[in-house]
Image 1: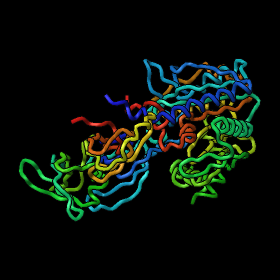
Image 2: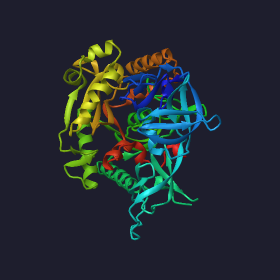
Image 3: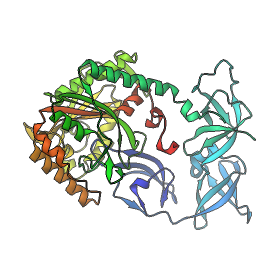
Image 4: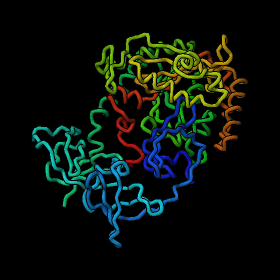
Length: 182
Length: 308
């Protein structure tokens, strides 16, 4: 069982939490504003919960699978033991597509036989495909520049990151963590 | 190893934050306030229904320095301020972090309307010190900081912005929900600073009841750029009434299965000596969010608990 203080983005409770805001009006109670999506039919709705509210975890199975490719906004994943393949829609994959390079190991969520959603590892390593060159004089600590990675996702990184380098990204925040030496 | 990027990118914000705190100190020292320090670890916080203290070896980390600062007031320190770390359990979000910095100050002989003016003077002073005259850019908007700022009572705010009255919201137990869904977003839309004042008595356990309207307490909240920045009272100085209010809060805590804190007896016994005064707690991290144009409290503290 979950209580409202366990709520966070991507938690699955029959419904999946798409957006989540913690609020606490002065001297008032903790409120958890959620944008929710019914995982079966995809309908979205909003609700505000109080800390006394409790939730049953979703009665769903997760299976380790590998991301293969995207075609016509259908995302294909494969069970590496049985070679069984399943497809998720653009909508079901959501923001996760920003972090999905070919052959990435992910968890696919099933309701019976039906694939519903995806859980990414917390960190992924992606190659920088577009970056302005580093102007050597620009060594001011804390300055940023935008780069594009192989998934076409754009994010802010330190100025010394160059095209062709691999960087580690936190999939929960979408933020740069560090360069990865291969 | 590469430098810690998350820390390096906060450089500018941490410099502004430090200058801001310097300006706050200047303001109070110029106005003859005494800077005080009170213990972070105390036997129990002021009993309030919805504020949870973090236990510490049989005692608790303070949720605000309120009780100790009022004991100082009662002992004859009429103008005092403190900038201190406070701790509240189960509070985490883009505007909340369990360990945060509060500025609290008290003025004897003042009421909450006088406190509103002092709040205006402080923010204008800090803004000027940081090079902002008349306005501050925050989240794509220009906040107009010229005084006087807007003042609206809670009752009027419900009338103007909500589908129900304050009385109905209280009766239907949806006051907080209406506040965050219908009222606070309107304060985020305006480019003015807003004092929201006269809260229902049950929502100001340490505030004086208004003589002309016994349903409300003399309490205000300051909103800036949609952020709730500060909470102030005309302080309750009647020990018997204060005890009854605390008992009510503790009863509610017990009923909802929360930790029941010890009655702050030393505070209550000294309260009789406390002069009429007004006090206020201002969220230093949130003020830093405004002056650094940050969307999250994480951007204005060097370390969040998740990064430790």
